[in-house]
Image: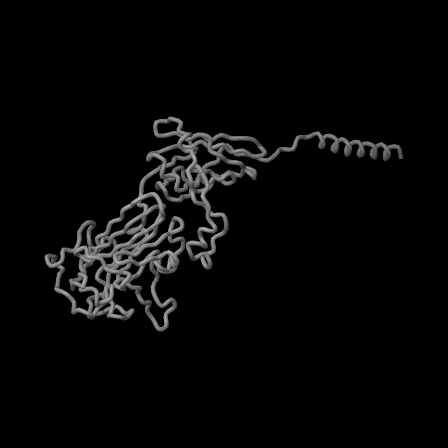
Length: 371
């Protein structure tokens, strides 16, 4: 009996001892890895464009994490924190965008505001580096960034964890990004390609990069306001008149197609699109613009009705080098002109605006003569 009582006392003492020492043992507060990194160690930003890097791979570190950049260096190793910490006015969303209802300038701008932000920010929770239009103010070059990562387990500094390349690029995407110009023939007043009457490949004169029949230029007139002007001229520089219907919507094909016309600038800016005697003008609310495609990528489709245009007939043009343009009657592809009033001239314009500003796009059709 005494042995049993002794064993019971010893068991009780053991339990109490475990509980006592357990209460005094320090519990680890998470984990922070010294080996965190990005999937790629370079992030290229085209000045003025919105861009986002990969997020930081935290190597099992406890969340939530708090991440911030501490220093940025130029290619010589000089600290240039002041350049990247300076704030600039940037347009941002204040509410969720709905592509089904937010289709007008007013509807979109109602969900936008301007806030002063540095050109590069680091997402506090996942380490994603985010660039905005304020990068227009950053000198071109290669930079490296230090990060500080902290959580309940401590703080870790990461030296030169990311190289940031600030480069220049097109403010407006035309070709090859986001697409290519196409010129073709339609049977006058219809959606149908001209087929054998207009040449091979259903009347397509050329579809692809380095279009020999399209000579274009883009001029950035000013930083503000956000206005885009499109002028289409014949080979002699005579403007087609959108206001008078000389540049018209291109019908969609099929029986009772919905929508009845292929997408164009007016569809993307229904309340700010204005046709004039010489140009199509629109006011756009943000970049990139268009935000979403209405179909067929970011291509704008038009036709020049046959009564306003005379079109050259040419032999097949299977490929072309950059800067090589159609030379009219002197060109080896020239075969004369098509019979007037038989064909409409179909034009596809690839277009997306990446950097805010006031622009003018001039398009000269080298195989077309205004009537």
